[in-house]
Amino acid sequence: MVFGSLQIQQKAGKFPIHNSQVQYKKINIMRFDLNLLRIFVSIFEERTLTSAAERLGLTQPALSHALRRLRDVAGDELFVRTARGMNPTVRAEELYGRVRGSLSTLEGALHEVPQFDPRSSTRSFTIGMSDYGMTVLLPPLIAHLRSAAPELRIQTRYYAHGAQYDDLFSGRCELSVTIGDEHPEWCAESELFEETAIGVAANTNAAFATVPGLENYLSARHVIMVPGQGDRSWVDDHLQALGHVRDIAHTVPHFVAIPAILERTPFISTLPKRIAARFIEQHDIRLFELPYSAPTHKIVQVWHRRKTQDAGHRWLRREIQAVAVGLDS
Image (tube, rainbow, N blue to C red):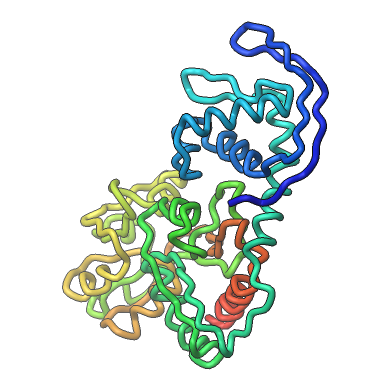
């Protein structure tokens, strides 16, 4: 994408490259290609020429040529090749702080739809969700959009654990609903609600008809959801911090498998409160309060900053926010 051009006069200067001094002649750049800024940002964020070239859809020789042009313009080496990748110079660090925000603003302006009418729009949005989001947030969202934007289409993409940012960066998703952990600086987020945990057992499991004692909870056999490889979840990390260990019988990769398992066994589980509340509508299970204080987690919607100023995207984020506020009413 070519953003435009500007006139710039670069004074002569020197900077070292690979322990040698290179004298640069006066550079008169009548048409500075702003794509060089995208290339600079990509190299800075990826830290390897190979990854930056793949991100931009360029060949590595073309990227190397562009980097030479950047060095000419900046009068600085910008990146030093090391065994761990391209290490930015102090000058590059300073430039990145100024360039990144400006570049995002330019990209946002070019991507923005001047007007967005949800009543007539036939636009399609791809939202990344785990089975938690698809169970808790997606049904009321689609019901709301049926009247608010009858022709608008939602495509839901399931993301594997930790892959939501890859999908956002690549453009496979325009928005993701996820836990509010640290996210890359090229992302923006807004909080939807807070979530906490609750115990779940079959209605026939008399031992958990009321709040269990801590020892009964820990000694019971647990079915847990582990997104990806592993044999423990954040609940186990929290219990370990309290000096406790629970008995894990089985792990599954999705929440939706758990209630049917509990119906047929004396096992118990610890689930997000909102998804557990949805499960009791369809399964012969009950909820019980945990015999310890469980932390809360922020549930957020996250998007690439390049989408921030898009009129349709802004509208959709507002609608998701409104649906999230009404979840517990």
